[in-house]
Image (cartoon, rainbow, N blue to C red; front, side, top):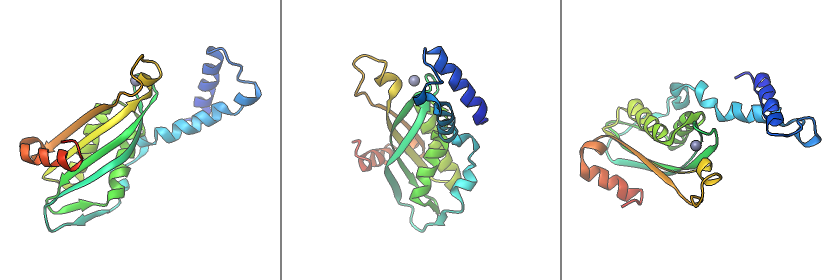
Amino acid sequence: MNEKRVAELVKELLKEIGEDPERDGLLKTPERVAKAWAYLTEGYHMDLDKVINNAVFEAEANNMIIARDIEVYSMCEHHMLPFFGRCHIGYIAQDKVLGVSKLARIADLFGRRVQIQERLTGQIARAVSDTLGAEGVGVVMECQHLCMMMRGVGKQNSVMTTSTVLGSFHNDPATRAEFLRLIGKH
Ligand code: ZN
C-alpha cells in the first residue's frame, strides 16, 4: 500500500465531506489514516507459513481442542467500517496441534483486510484444517458490525453469528454437538 497516495485520497475525502483538511486538528489526519489502513489491511501481505512459524507440535491423543473467545477485528467490504467480536475454534488433531497464540494470528491474517464475516469464518477454518491436516474443524464467530450499529435503526445490539464446520465436525452430529457444548452454545 502506498501510504502517501492513500493520504492524498483521505485529504480529498475530507474536502468532499465539507471539511477543511488544512485546519489544525486535521493537518496530520490523512497520514494517520493511511498508517491505520496499512495496519488494518496487513493481512494481504502476511504469509500463513510465516505466521505459523513452526509452531505445529506433535500430539499423541486425538482429543478435541478448543480455543474460545479469540478477539477478531476486521473491516466490512460493503462499507469499509469495522466489525469485531469473538471467534471460537475447535479441532480434532490427527497427530498435530497448534500453539493457541497462532490461532489468534491466523484470525488476524484473514481479519486484517476488507471482509465479510462468512468468508472470514471459512478462511480461518480452512487454514487450521490445511495446516494441521485435522480430522475436523469448527469455527463459530460472533461479531457486531458498525455499519449496522451506526446506520441501522434498532440494530444497536445485534450480533451476527457465522459458523463453518469441516470434516468430522460436519459429518458427525455428535462431534458437532460436543463442539457447540464446549464453546457454550448448546
Ligand atoms: Zn457493512
